[in-house]
Every structure is written in C-alpha cells, then in structure tokens.
Amino acid sequence: MSELAAVFPFFQFPDTGRIWFDHIPKNKQVDLELLKYYFNSFCNVGIYEEEEKSRIFNDFNPLLDSEELLMKIRFSTSGGIDTTCTTNSNE
Image (cartoon, rainbow, N blue to C red; front, top):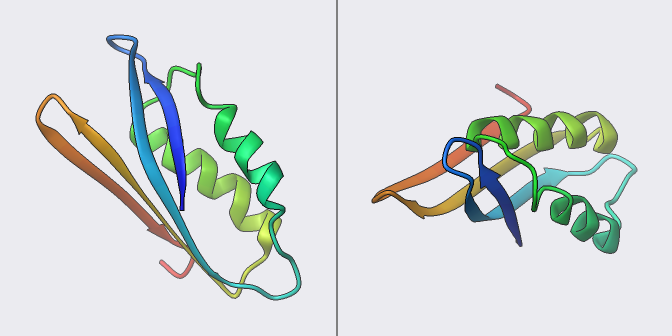
C-alpha cells in the first residue's frame, strides 16, 4: 500500500489516495524505491481519478507480466464523495 497524490484538473485541488496492488508474479518483482518515485511523479499532474488508475494499470500490467494483477485506488473524500477505482487484468 502506498500514498498517491495528483491534482484534480478542474479546480486544481490536490487529490490524494491509497493504492493497493495484488499480483501473482511470474518472474518479475517491483523495486519499491522506484515504485515510490513513480507514484510521486503524479504529485503535480492534473489528472482525473479514473485516468490516473488507467495510466498506472497500463504502465504496470505489461511491465510485471503477472499471472494476475488487481489494482485498487481509494481516493480521499472530495466534495463529500468517496471514490474507489478497481481494475483486474482478468477482466
């Protein structure tokens, strides 16, 4: 689990959340320090939550080449609405 931050593009407010990866590896693992730098690269990016989820998943799914990859991002409450974005490589 890791913290994730970006900027909501419409109002330019910070958008934060927590991300979970659950994967069944074949041969590859993720370097945790590089993963931290990757997540931090979103800090000043104006991106919608669903786009951020898709971009991260599309970057990691082919890179990890997992048997199965499940990713969930739980974004902090924004405007009174909780958002959880989930995607699975087997869907």
